[in-house]
Length: 126
Image: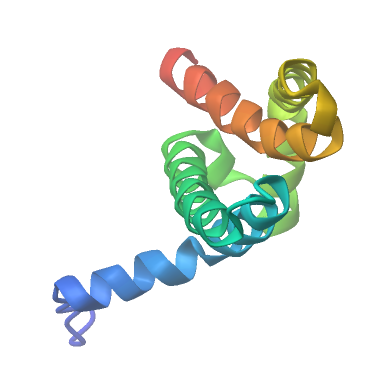
């Protein structure tokens, strides 16, 4: 048993969440600014919020499932890719079909959304 206490307040937890969700935040800001050319600042803000939310949900689904028990980070990443590739393909295809004039950006945004949805369904039922 450790004698070091972990006493975190709300500010500390918010910083931990920001650090954990920063990859989704950065990717969302970049893709949002590129996808919404007429309103780049609003697109970056909206994309950053959606990216951080998707990253938080992905972490939640991964830690709730057997992915967290995989052999290291590489094993967890490989297991996630093996489980979620259909969601990535379906999300990218549906987004590219829906937004045909900007299908590349739509596929890049729709793929991660499909992964999160696929892993959410998978972790709920399996």
